[in-house]
Length: 143
Image 1: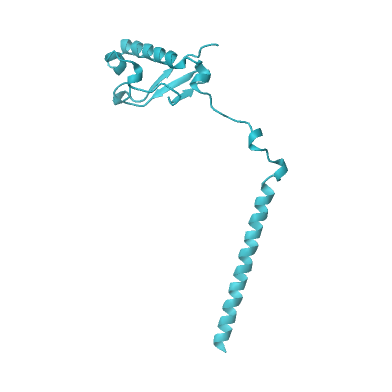
Image 2: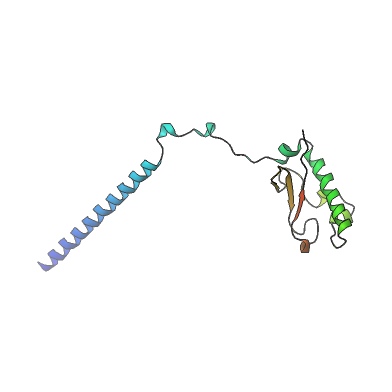
């Protein structure tokens, strides 16, 4: 008889736990449904605004590779004249910049507050690693 009471009590406790869990799950799904807008209010993906970042071609035009190469090479030369301790590999080796870094759609850049691209080269790619990452502000061409 004592064994039956223990089993009955255990079944009762398990039943109560199952009811509590199902109530919690139902409550959670109700809250999710309330927070999500109705299906008719959701904007289809085609109509959503795209926040695509500009590309170098968008900012500098179709011939951006030549413009970047010339501008960065010129800035490297100017920096070496001002600081003889800084040596840029393309200038020292009299080699094209593209021998050291890719100038294409994969080139890392940021856009400054004036809308000009700032090209970023990791440390050690165009000068020794002691000079850290190199950045080159590129004036936008007014098209």
